[in-house]
Length: 312
Length: 313
Image (cartoon, rainbow over all chains, first blue to last red; front, side, top):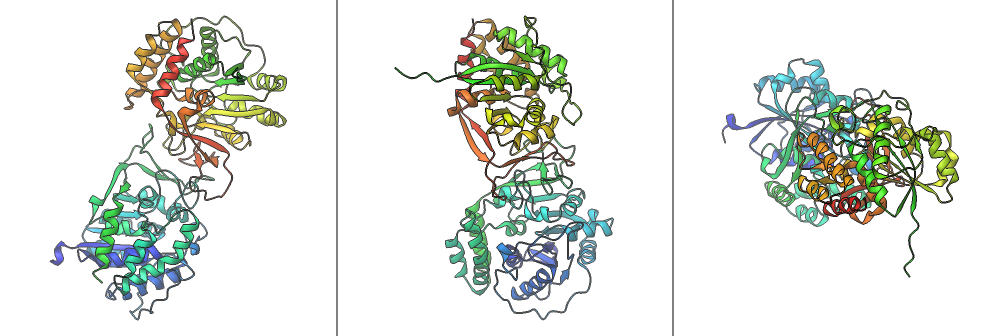
């Protein structure tokens, strides 16, 4: 494949067990030209997500991809983590070798902006953590919205939440940032709970994955901590939340959704972080700013994940 | 001999409105309900119009239970009236008889209070408009909660809204009142948009109702036609008879699918004011406070309406 045909892509992430799988898939796809990875506080603190992002990139054999440090906390709210799913170190308490790649000094929002400029309007941004870094990039760089081709987000829900009754975790973590991103004018693909909770990989499938090779075994092992939590909460398996966002641009046929107006609530007392969509309502927003994914072919998705991980 | 079930004493509280009207036609038709009072609330239209409409409906269906008039505005919020849905009168369409009786002179919450106090059995309230009157009752007489068997209401939506993307009209009009009702601890049946937008009466069903032949049947068919006019433009294949589901929940619950959820009402927010937030995944681990109605046997519902109009002369 020639370089010109590859899709320039940026990943913003908070690894995170499903983030790790998203990264593994990203680097298994030669169609993607990964310009950079940025870390944000989310599932665990920034110090850990940044180190995990660096270590994961190295572990997947792509030390050439620069990893940038982003925001340590949401724009206005206190940080909220999810240790119960991702373990003390953010990777299900599985230890990776420390990356010896040089530490990038440029902040995430500047690095993203530079990459967007260089990609000439073609950069796809995949954001699978709280949207703090992206909001900061939009805030600082007034022309960034004209430079991004699309933002694929893992976050939100067109119906109900799982981190609060009304909100999904990534949006709940920083609703003001999410609101900035949804209002940015860049076309958005929303991989929300409506779709991602239909992607649950069973423990048996995870075990089968773990037998493929050491990379896949690491992903399987890292998932065990969160698996116990999920099972205690009635989900027998691991939802592939973040991997769907990485796969969507190359495998849109696995998914279905609808164009909608989406607004993020930042003022409500019990609805902070709700992604309000007009999909089912008589009343429509005066804009359509997102493709809200609602369904997925789970069997084909799992098969695709297995096939891609076999490449390691 | 089969034991006859004692009728449930009910108070009908609404802002008629075509679907309120049909809900009341259904309630009056059922031997399972004993209508102890009717009250008006401002919602679809001003309190003057909803009161006049309510009295005309009661006259049409021969319901002369004591009538109490509601206050002219929600507890805290500004009123919203919706001539687009129900017409300028709030109940446009067929000509109705002029009221043949007067309100009893007690304000709506005071009448509710009197009926509940005087009833031997706990009373069920059926609000099909904003919850202003019910909230006023609960705020002023919290001691009467134990004599309220249930509140079977039309309002809200677990998955979506209609008057805003997040909120349903009745809750949006008086979200503070709704919050008081939802937090009251009284058992609640919630006929929200999740089910009521499936409670569709199709044009061919209008004809079935009209063919019953009596005056009430003719009026109900014409109400449905008028109500459908607004909804057809939004792409509905029929008229969603929202409010009648709150009555059906009491007389024919087997037509409905219930899901018990912990539900809170949002009273603030840029987009979510009036949103009924259901804790679908039990994130908060709280005991359910609402039996949310999520689905309906549509054909059974239409059959129920047809049988209801047959009971009239």
